[in-house]
Image (cartoon, rainbow, N blue to C red; front, top):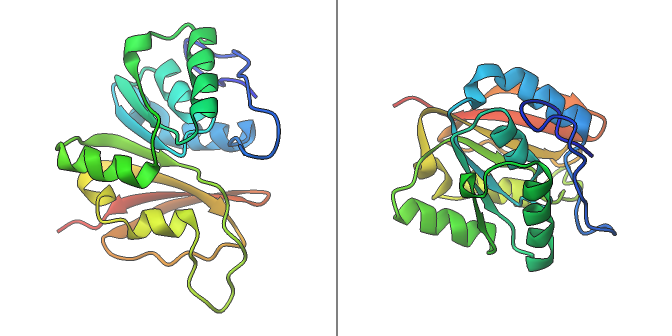
Amino acid sequence: MRIIGGSAAGTILKVPKGFEVRPTPDLVRQAVFNSLGARVAGAAVLEVFAGTGALSLECLSRGAAGAVCVEKSARHAQFIRQNLALARLPETALDLRVQDAFAALAQLAAAGCQFDLLLADPPYGEKNIGRRSVSLAQQLLDDPSAPRLLRPGALFILGHTKRDTLELPPPWEERKRLKHGDSVMRFLQLIPR
């Protein structure tokens, strides 16, 4: 697993052993960042369920102004710190929060923080044909704090497995969908008022 583009392109990222982390594959990240293009430069980024921090680090490598990276596991957060150092990106550009993603969303929204990009590729949910999803991806869509964190025109990039059928509640609308193997990456925006 590596950083694909920008100033840190080619940096090999450290990944925790085992199945606790499922990093967003290089090909999926490449497709996402090809679609984002110049939107990343100068952007304020929030990544939740960060794992290795690959999405945040990719944004910083491509010129994002800064990233808030949320990872619940202190062990995994150590890998994010190591990967930031390996990529030789400024420590001040990354605000690493070791906490629950939903608690972080509520705190950041209460503080009035806003972002240009919200990135989430949480652990996959189970197959849910015939019933509403209870996955972390669905919980993010249902979370009342998430919409308050987006600036006008901002994008919410949400990853999930294709077997997890999500319900897209207001205020979200889908702008684009990328599929690769079992992975789906959805580009969402707030419905204009």
